[in-house]
Amino acid sequence: MEYKGDRYYIEQVLAGNSNSYSYIVDRHKNRAFNLAFRICGNSEEAEEIIQDSFLKAYRSLGSFKMKAGFSTWLYRIVYNTSISQVRTRKERVLSLEEFPAEAVDFAGSGLTDEESDSEYRNAIVNFALQKLNEDERGVITLFYYEEMSIEEIAEVTGITKSNIKVRLFRARRKIQDVIEKAEKKNLIYHE
Image 1 (cartoon, rainbow, N blue to C red):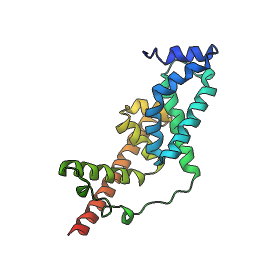
Image 2 (cartoon, rainbow, N blue to C red):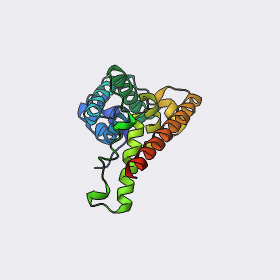
Image 3 (tube, rainbow, N blue to C red):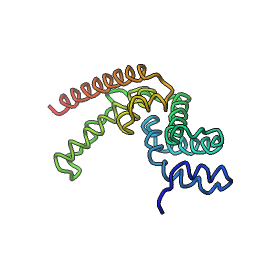
Image 4 (spheres, rainbow, N blue to C red):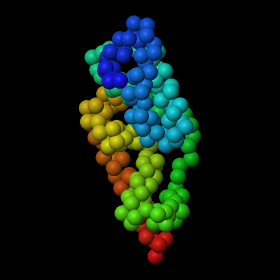
């Protein structure tokens, strides 16, 4: 069945057909999950976040002004719920020594050298992302993984465009520093 657009299903829900909301959930659940997961770093927690977010969106659907895109409005709910969730828990911060470079043997996993290198790079980038605070992870996720513009990120997060640029710059520097330190550690380990 062809998706008829968010506006159509929102109008259906507001008219009393609550089953139409399932089409909206199906349409946006993967991107919402990816955003929540990148911010919180835990798949079970991300599932809870998106369930809470979709429930909040459903309950507030009557106040949604159809001027902006529904996805922007929804991702703002997911973003804020994710940030709040991460801030309420006390997560142990990983140290560079905990990076599992010696435990992650992609070369021995039956992958080609190129695939092994790619898997290692992904692992080290994900490790570096977890070293960022939740605000930085959120902005990096929206910019690089969701491919949103600075303007769209400002709309989702409520942060000014100039502040987003500053956060992106700082987050990139932190990621680069973590990767360089991990690479140095990995070179020392394998020598």
